[in-house]
Image 1 (spheres, rainbow, N blue to C red):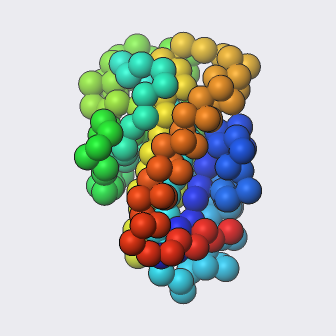
Image 2: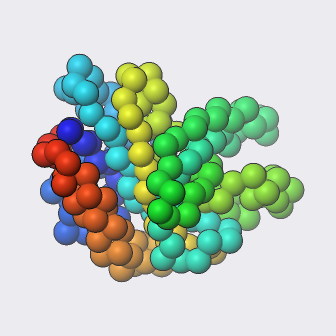
Image 3: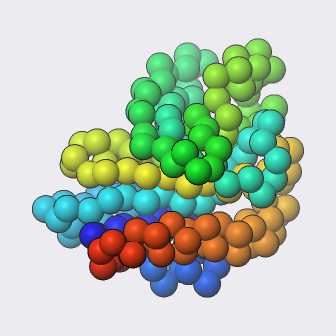
Length: 194
């Protein structure tokens, strides 16, 4: 079984960094990284495993989530929001399942209006800036896609606090991913793609 691990930045995965393909923060960086990766591996049969951190308005910091649905949206042109695209994802029933909203920027009151935030929060559990690109590539190239995310903040911290939290939480996320890979490896040998 071939698995390609993806995360935005090394801080999210700590000591596990040598096994992970990094996209960088944001959809533009993720798109460039995925084009490069798929040029090399598009003809191989593999599962994409997207790991990393998310902000959540109602899940406690440190909670690991299995992403079951991804909404892509929030690009703004002349104040008009693009319609989101929706992707169903295979979720892991052993951990809480979440709906993720993937946007072009950090989701916060400084960026979005209160009304837009309220409407979005009523439909989703967590937020990141890369998942919609990864799941789009998985669908386009007919690859399996699985995602585990750890809640790093409640949409209430600046970038410096976020960086420290992801470093601290990386140990928890890596332990969970090692457990998942260990369970998969009991039935067949796992090859990590880079």
